[in-house]
Image (tube, rainbow, N blue to C red; front, top):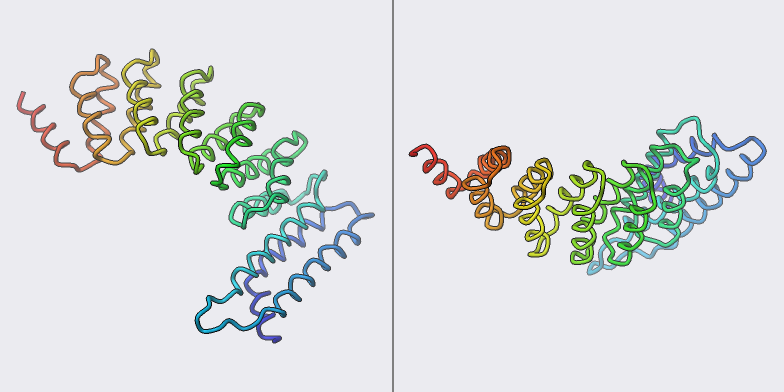
Amino acid sequence: MSTTIWRTEDVSSSIGVHAGSLLHEVTLDSRLDALREVALTLLHEVESLRSLRPPRSSEQPRLPEAVRRFETHLILAALEKTRGNKPVNEPIRSRAISWLGYTPESQTKNNLLTEIVRNDREWTDARNQAMSALGMNRSAASLPLLENLYETMASRDLKRRALSGIARNDNRDGAATFLIRVAENEKELELRRSAISSLGRIAGEKSLGALANMMDADPETEIQKQAVTAIGRRAKDEAIPILIRAARSHPKMAVRQQAIRMLGQTGDERAVAFFRELLGK
């Protein structure tokens, strides 16, 4: 039994070190209490590992799942004890927040990450990492939260990370609808470009049609070029006919050139045939 516990600690040793570093930053009066609580959490998780029955030959081992649960609880406990404080070793805390994006979903985790994002007294990197971690939750139920955070946060970096998370959401239709609205109506050019780039990662006719329309009709040349780039990163059968059309007949030279560049990256026979056509003129 002791061997099993040692291996579990070995798997999670780096997280334990970082959690300890986080606790070191808590004010002196509360540090011992905080350490005691995290130690109890550690003990509880190790004891839960001891209670695991050996898997039958037909079952998958449960140890990795238990270790992931252990890691999540430890990170959450450490972050809870530094809530409201600005640790001197900020990169360690930001890294711990980032790791939460890779752990199993829970309401406790998402509530903590949301609180960090909304807290303007937090370090900038911690807020950015929290937003990215929230964006890794693909659940359709998380889409309204990401949309709300985009609408209410002032930081451009936070907004970009929210858009990236929205593009990964399992509610593809809802995500496409929101990204199209941002791409068409957002006042800031860079955020419009981010929304278009994110829209390019969502499969389906809705997103493709919106990108083609922006390529054809948006008054901003940079937006049209961004739409061409986003189209060029989609599946070849979707992208190549639209890119060839743009390269052949778009009224703006800059957009035609961007379409040609994207076609050149595909290596597709249809693109090669189009280039031969151009050279033959």
